[in-house]
Length: 329
Image (cartoon, rainbow, N blue to C red; front, side, top):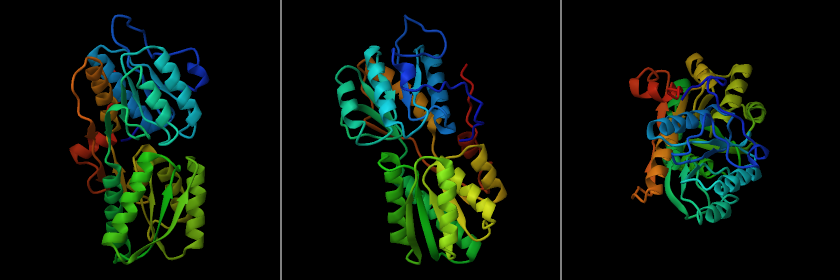
């Protein structure tokens, strides 16, 4: 999914900004139900796409959809405060992507005592979700491993050598699942690929750049890197470009924006594993509305993961994922 960083009117809402209660984007409609959507980070292109889908669902279904979230995926306490204030507003339901698995478990349990909770993208240590819509991230990690192996063979002529994994943030359920799928697939299918390092970052692209630079310096036999989210993909791609090693080091990362698609097109990045965040936002609101009306919904919905390469990015299905519609009409 590709988005220019300033392309969507997504308000950057911190915990302080919602201290007084819900904030809606656009005029409120008192006669219609309210379903807040709480993302991890309103500044990220990925989450802006989620919010675009949620906004369109609100328009189509006549639902007020406040768009809420912190300004950083690492602001766990900020998201908890946002959730508590959203519950205080007595909405019909809440859609949330938890920032951290353990920390959001109890707050979601408590919130679900008052309002139905729909989870999207990442889970939490809670069984209180009425429904959960996400990529099967473990499968997505396996897709990344297979894509990396193919890219290594294309660059070096063989599927062998040293590879590394960069984890954007510890304790995030979706990332943990991706990393598990990746490492298990490498171990099971590619005995001549050796995972020599798993590096943990702080959710900042600059850290991803520095980690990748250090990996390249310390490991001259490195042939591949998996960056487990968009932000790490941006940082790792920049490091590979700056060190001019794209001809011998393959990079695969989760998600896409204009920058990572640029890296794909110029050969810096070998492949992207692309989710469907627009669908998560849209169907999250649609499912929440159904639950609020007492309708039965699926407990778990897999929204899919697709490998994008330079060879297939013009395929209509792939193009719709990497260039989603962002207008909310």
